[in-house]
Image (tube, rainbow, N blue to C red; front, side):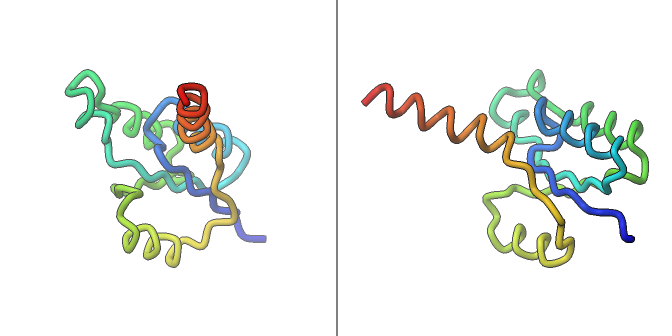
Length: 108
């Protein structure tokens, strides 16, 4: 049986990196996508490359990284066409998008 593949967006961030570790330790092949956008937003103190490197060292061949801005629709389509992951977690999306929507609704 082939090893299942998980695609994790924001893989160098707080939630994404822990999702990577969790699933890699359970036998999944984890493919992380991150473009270090935090460094753009917050400057050098927001840089997450250290976490990307930690994942690569800790998880070895169970982790692969793709430098990609997920707003790049053709890039995302090409990556998914290539990888065909069995799963993509919604944890980070729920935290960010749903949390933002809750704040907007509360403000309205």
